[in-house]
Image (cartoon, rainbow, N blue to C red; front, side):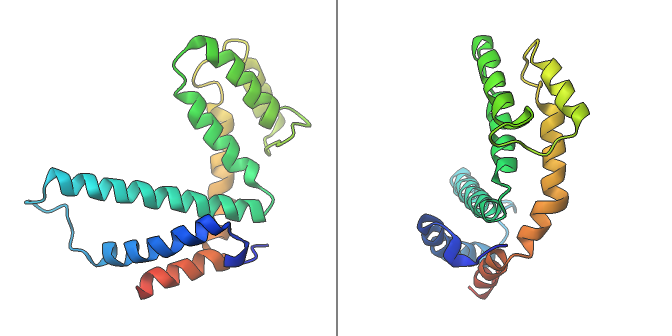
Length: 168
């Protein structure tokens, strides 16, 4: 069960205060997508959106920690990092590490995957590629989308921050 704002790390709370101010002014600005905005404005908006997305990820992750299911987002993000691995020599070692940490039975941070998905993922490790975790990652994403994320949107932490943002 989410324990509210006091359960968040101090850095998240400090960032929440910053974003309250940021969101408040951001939401009141006119649409910058109309003709006449500059490249500098586009970059500023892009940077703001990235910061807000990172903050949202921080809040969602803190919520998952409070729900004892943080391994889901950790696995998802590990797969995203793995997918952009450039060198084939790193693929094998990193794939093995991710598999042992999250996928194999009795893994320290085992994610909730069916037997078939685990078997396919294990077989994919024979010839590691950037997509060898794609099926497992899709399953965990779907789990978060259907279960964790809707609970996060109803959590006191999210509702409080949303209220603060809307009230400006």
